[in-house]
Image: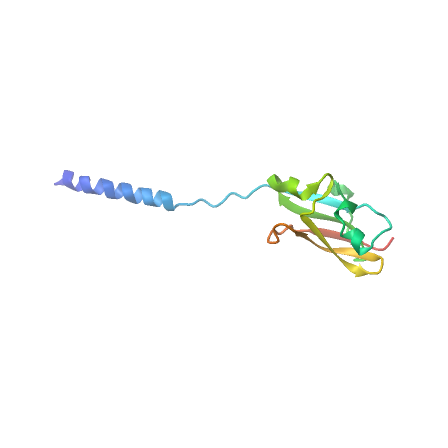
Length: 135
């Protein structure tokens, strides 16, 4: 009788273990992130079209960025991106067209208000923006 019970129990246990194994899904691993730091290069042109032009921003080290003072004119910003996607956010040492720089201000004095991912708007770039007083 015991052997007959084992004959049925073993397949049932085997199927239960297989179902449990297939149902288990580990949490997705968090991808490595990196922060890119950019500084505004023109020292006297703070018009809207210049501030939002990606070619006027250059990749710099964290120590070369500005410290937030006031929202008069643009100075620097940083974005956090996935390490394996870093190249898509760069064109040489400037932000690529994927990086949308938004500005606000008036006349000849604009500052950065936000930095967005133009390709995947749901991506949070966690921008850290530093604007300074007019020079």
